[in-house]
Amino acid sequence: MKFLDKIPFRTAIIMTIFLGLAPFTPEPHVWEKLKMLVAGDLVKPIDIFDLLFHIAPGLVLLAKIYRHNTGADQSES
Image (tube, rainbow, N blue to C red; front, side, top):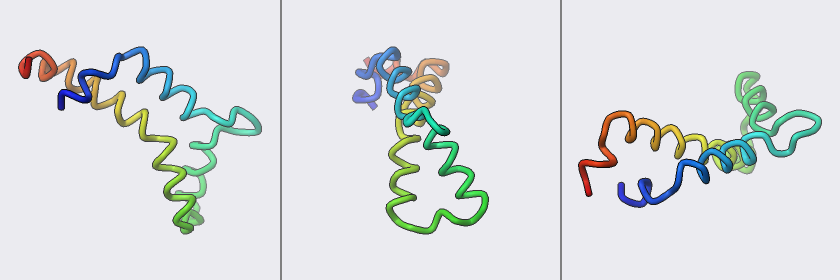
């Protein structure tokens, strides 16, 4: 997971904020897609890909936080 350790926290946070909230109006895209998922309307492959695309930086950030908190990022050096 060295590639994950090479991504700076600042970059992961900025990407999570901008891709997670874009477009900012009328509502964040991820929120719209999550509402579609709960309603059962998220069936088109493009919508599923779009949701995964927008939440990917958040997943990377969560993985970085987990690795940092468990000390896994220092043990592989």
